[in-house]
Image 1 (cartoon, one colour):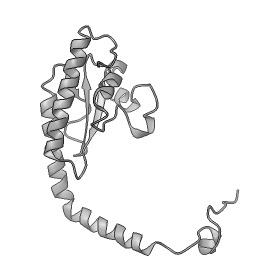
Image 2: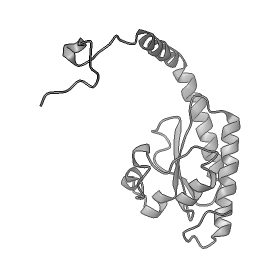
Image 3: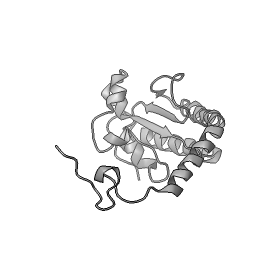
Image 4: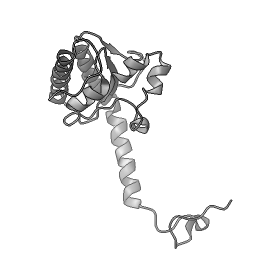
Length: 172
């Protein structure tokens, strides 16, 4: 099977690539890599501290658990499960103001629990009540404080709205 060029013209790379390379983009990417290399250790420490602060606060909520290793992981991500809280209802409660996910981006349209969490040994119900929090280079302490407050309030409201742990509807 012969590959077909996606853009016509030019004839570079045996007819597979047309046009001139994006020299400013290439130089900009190189500069971004240099900046990242210089700031990587500082970012790692700062993001780990913010993630740990978020976790420590959320783990004060009854039935809350960090999923996966707390030692061997990336500094900017945590995945937390909330017992007796439906993940969809939880996401609906604060996803307008806080960008989080109940699974990986590639499976966000599926209703099944995360295959990664089930592979870690989580039961389907617990996997469905799990939320992934991802921090970025620009995440601030104020955003972490806001997230801790919002998540705590929504979970308390959901548990109050549904004290028996049955499937919830999003409270008004």
